[in-house]
Length: 444
Image (cartoon, rainbow, N blue to C red):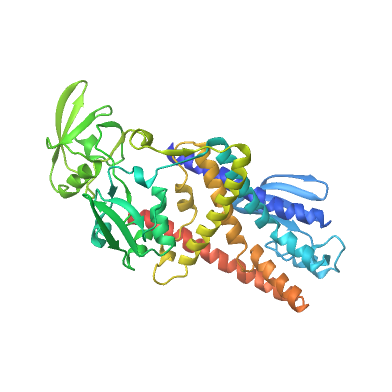
């Protein structure tokens, strides 16, 4: 059910953003009296799931969910309609419009995606405000892994600053280190201030999910709610509703101590001390090779453990705040994109496709998360489409700017070959990104 909810959210978000993007092209094309022959959600090679004609435009839904398109008369696009381009230009065609009109038509999708992201952020801030965990309120300190330990961090450290700059939102500490090339972390360890240097090789490991810095929480009684497919606990006789209170009669102060004990003793049976129907039970379980019990359990929500901070916005306050958040998100994403071309970070190894994107949605339907993620994906779609790659909007813009600057228009034959080259490149990137997803599934 969790996977289904994630898929539904992803498909719904993608559909909304594709329609908004193509609506940008459609609106600008119609504004300049350019004929739009097709407006499709998803692609329709060979057949479509649904189509209807209104006026000169056919509206439809394709079966291949890799985006969408509008087919504009007199334009070399993914339809590769060579026959139309052999005919004399008509007044209603794209190629008959002035260069600045064509430029606006081609940037319409990107503009609509940027604007829609800002509007969504405004809506979210007005409806729900902004809730976050202040770094100063992470009262139990942090938790990290062996990679974090290697650079000098310790479980229980309280982060004071990064490069001697206080980071208000605790969850922004890791992105701040990665995106802004931070050099040091200042922590409070048992009342003593320590400055820890961030080595160059730490960031590539963080991008692969290692060395992460998260908040430490107290150990709580674990009420078993579900089991994994391969569950040593279930095989040993643990039941849903059982309450795990300790291991080998050892009481743990923090949740990470419980997990570390499992990791250190994964080669032998450990005794789960639990309560079942009000009575104590002791069940021996041998953890998996990864030191897991294969259980799902409930714990206290974050707001019952920490003092979260919520900022509320009135309608007029939400407008500048939403726009500011939109521009900050654009800036952060551009920094992330820059990492892809760095040999040092090897961020391209972490590049993902549809599975990676789908995983960022929560396993339960949450409208606030849905709209925040939709706004973020809208910005990603805008940035990716404006890249100067033939077959993307940015490729058309690149050739139009060349025409504006030089006064020379590239030939239709050149644009046709460029479109083919761009489509091959995009297909290769699509295969690479989704191939990374598949490889990561097999490596688990």
